[in-house]
Image 1 (tube, one colour):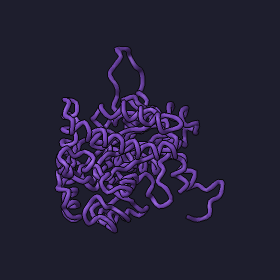
Image 2 (image 1 turned 45 degrees about the vertical axis):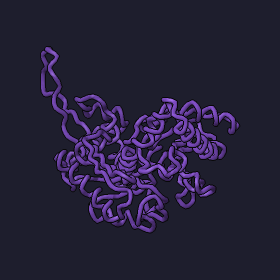
Image 3 (image 1 turned 135 degrees about the horizontal axis):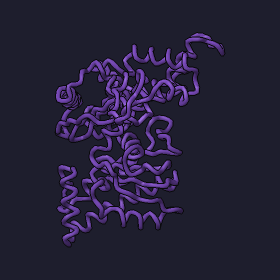
Length: 386
């Protein structure tokens, strides 16, 4: 970017455009806002607002709002023109590349959901099969919602493993052929827009902060229970990824004991629990509630291991809230013993809650990544300075 001076006209136009667009996007009235409303909201001059609105109309980001219903009173003269933000001017996509399912969620530019699609997958399938399933899910979603791929402005992608800023998976032991995969590069071939790749637990905690159990908390740890447990953390409302993107990889703690993996902990037969999915885990917990001794012992082992993992994060980060997600998100049995055990090991016991988004948390978090990107481009003054 060239040198900017205080009266740089391009910069001023960009800032003014951002301020007006933000005022329109924040309007919840179907009738939109008049030029007078925008002048009052932005504190810009009327000629400036008029010029900006015309530019935004030409760019397709703003439209004239339809006239509201008549109040029955007689009006004289031409009614004031009113304008609204065109949420339908572009679309956002969130993709969850899970171990046994890939799913996608589509929204408009405000984050309002328009549809979802998913594909089941075998946990042993290689990377190419998984990517093909994701492609199929996205194609179905765009087809059923009648949305053109060309209208996508950003795509967020969530995946197990450690992810670099460029979208390369530096370590992805939970998925075959995933370590070293240039995931971001591969997916950018399918989309003509920005593609953002993030760890699944990090995406999950963003989703819970946005629409789920953590809306009222800024310091949050979310644990995704699964084949390789992971955790995402917010510190002061900001995602904590760590120096190399490996923060929250609590699955590595299982290496301290080879038999301490979830499929061994939850076994009721002496053999590893297979497949390790939501249905199998829920069945073990149901048996425990019915008084089955072996299932009860399995649940106890699992909770103790979960306490071991979560306590390490609580002692390090002192979060206000711990959210439990993954395939344990619907198991109320976990909350009370987890909270009680954390009270034994931690200096201050955080609140504990189940994920409010369940199996949709990761895809929702991926969508939030895309929404954050677009908001940074369109609705913040900081974006105007880039």
